[in-house]
Image (cartoon, rainbow over all chains, first blue to last red; front, side, top):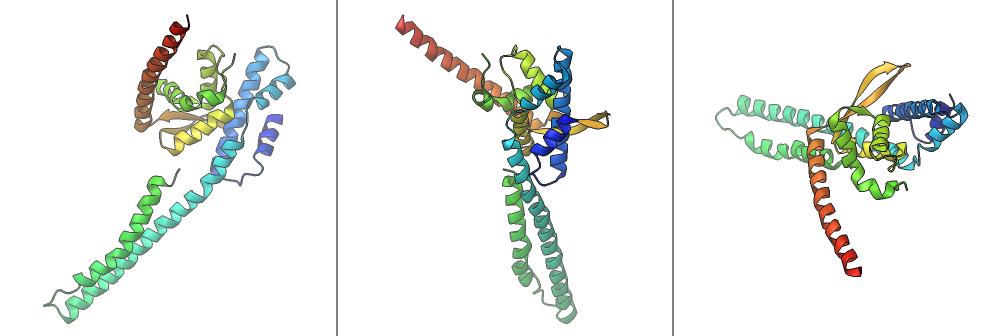
Length: 138
Length: 114
């Protein structure tokens, strides 16, 4: 019980997330197991629990990692949506061009020229997406 | 004398990878195994261990999965990815070479003083 409260309190400043829950779960179970091991080795419960908690060590680095984890993940979904939006948008414009081309001037194929210009849109979004995907986790 | 975590830090990633290459393990199991195999000379605090695990996960060198649920909670087990295995081989190789070089340099120094 005490282990639970202590670990929760240490991570109070970290915003809630699945990663935080999962890590706290691990830390609590580790400390509980360590305390149980220490008790099996002859320590009284209070000493064992205190020792297990102290030996968790300096949690500041993993707290910082947890906080930094959030923003890149959120923006990855936003980037993915941007990519889908640009692909869908350019496909619509290309379809419209194709239709106008075939309907009004079926004997001259001119729609490919605006298509080349439009392709820069999804391609540039794709580039941003791929760049972030490779280096984003760091 | 216990060796400080600072000194071992550069090798901790490889040590963790080595332990989970043998079999999938959870956090405390890894810490306990390091303690046991080092004859209690190397003590890894959970904070240091999980910082390394976070780093390994972010670089996709290890992955985790939930094990069986005991006392209403599930343990998280870690296992290396193919990249992780490759990274371990490189690190182990690098260590062997560095060890050899430092051994030679330190030995020579001692011989001269005698």
